[in-house]
Length: 547
Image 1: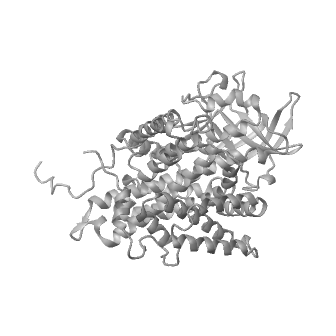
Image 2: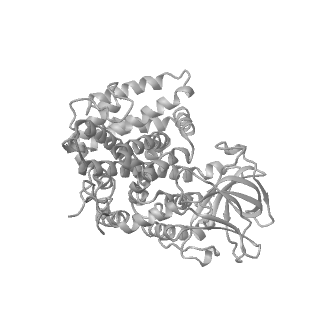
Image 3: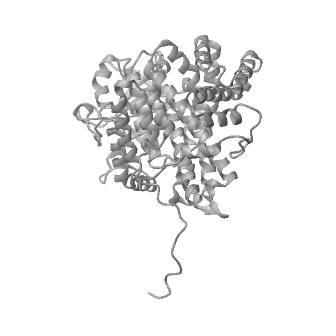
């Protein structure tokens, strides 16, 4: 109709769809090649490209938006007034979760090179919709805890590591796959799990108990089973709580409410009440914290991976927009100041990816030295990488200008999600204090860390100087707790620098060392010093869409 068209819309970047998120991420591809046995590499590449293509497809992006826009709903009762305590999800959620399970994101403990290949897939899948990553993470992490009880592991591990998503609450023995959640935190105890009051009373059958208490945070409350900490006669103990008992009856698992969260909206997190709830002990009485250590280490690694994935997607979006958007006579990405911002963001993203995959490789190795390295490097990485995620996401949104504040752009979802991994599995102070305990109580952890960064000795004078400064920090024990954050930040950035100097292109390592390991750095992104090859850094981060 005449008068309804004012002009043709031009000067917009093409949709960032239809590409392989794995293959387009050069830093991730190189890390996988570095840490994967040659005989597995072809298989792993194909597997990761498959999930990369899926995550980059228009269909999965549509499902992700639908899942985020339609949060789960709690149904406590059926139409007749019977308690059912179920969580309803949008169909898109189930499609996404099914793809995640089918891609092997719960199989890290049972396949050759399992942790590295799963870590790369987790980093990629986070970029599709991070909300599905919580049940995938908890299910994978439950495996080492259950292995403390061989009988339980024999029954549950094949289900948890299955690549079949079998939704619906039924007895586990009749399912083709199962998911796990966790209920650890209580409102009066928070991170201090030894202050928790949920009580466990032994039953006549050996290893079985009833639980009574309230959990302030229950992860993935729609799952088939849960790891729960409760106070048994012998002290804090780990338990397995199935949602459905072997005879088909529902266990007492009273969902009080779902949390209304800033981000991670497609995923359910809730409060749960136990009132005579049947449970099976996992590990020895009084050794609950020790039993869940491997689980916590696994989920903390996933926090690092999740943040690295969110950063990668934020950088991808920013570089893509600026590579196609023109202003003031040229492409935004070619303007010196914007190039500085994009390169700074890209360096942060690549450093996070290199560190996350190195830690996954340490899980695969399993040797004493690698376990010692994880004891110090994992809390340091969890502290630092997860904290860098939010400023990266916000700066990336700013690169899109006002478009980055509009939900359709995808950046607001990344911004809302970005603080999450810093809060989950122990916030910043918990990680800093955990690293401090490793330094004070486990000399082998520091030895392993120093051996790792020592492999880059002499390759960059700024890194060598940063290592000397770190030694000075470690030598000064006075008031160490108050300085724990500063120390852990240095531990993380020096380790990142050592990895980039050894494995990244010269322009990336140069920019990182110049801006993260010296005093010549600004407080915000886009303050990289002069003399760096920023064009090459930005080009490395750019996604090239198929013609």
